[in-house]
Every structure is written in C-alpha cells, then in structure tokens.
Image (cartoon, rainbow, N blue to C red; front, side):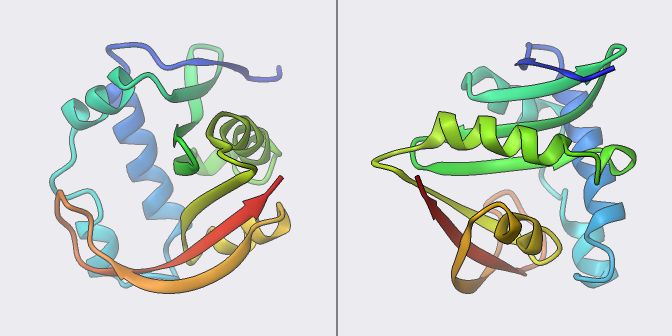
Length: 153
C-alpha cells in the first residue's frame, strides 16, 4: 500500500519524536560519533514536536496507521525530513522531499542543512553543496558537521 501524505495532526508529537530518534540511531551511525548520536535528541521531546506540528508546515506519510516519515518546511527552507529506517530506500524520502520542495520554494530556491549520511541522497535529488559547518541545535546536543545545500527550480 502506498503511504498517504497528509498534514500532521496535534497529538502526533510523540510519533515524530520516536521516528526522528530511530532514524538518527540507524541511519546516521557511521557518519557521527556514538556520543553525537546519543546527544542528538537532547532538549527535544514530544512537546517540542507538538510545537513543530502547530506551526502547520509538517506533512506525514502514513500507512496502516503508522507514520513512516515526515517533512517540515519554512519559506525557502526544508527544515526536517526523516523516514523510519525500515521504510528507507523505497522512494518515500524522495516523495516527501518533492512535497517539501514544492511547499518551501521561494524565488525558485530551496536550501537545507543535510546530515553527512543524507547529503548523497539530496545530491541525487538535484541539491548542490554550498559549504559545511558545525551545527549545534539551540535545544542542545553536541556539535555535528552538516552540509549546506540548495536546489533551484
């Protein structure tokens, strides 16, 4: 069954938190230290994701009552895209990415900060690297290298 894409709903913050944590643990391993991965979700909880949902820019992919992935945007930015590890590699990330790009597009340009493990995926989808920085989330966690990328069109 092809997952349905819909706006995230209030009360789904825990599901988004759990999905993000699972994706980071499974998909970022090998690109970040165990300490960085362990600290990645510091300062975040279900309430944090409820606030993200309340902003109204989150779309989820759901099948059989399970959220398999989500994308979040702001004008000109793709801010979050996560897929459950077991759903990775099946085209769902690309589908969510295109929905996110369409929602975020500002003057034909979309920017994002990719994790090291996700940068090759974004490059295959037409994003180009514009630089690298050490990023520390305002809510906590250890600094982690990210790849600044952008796509026109």
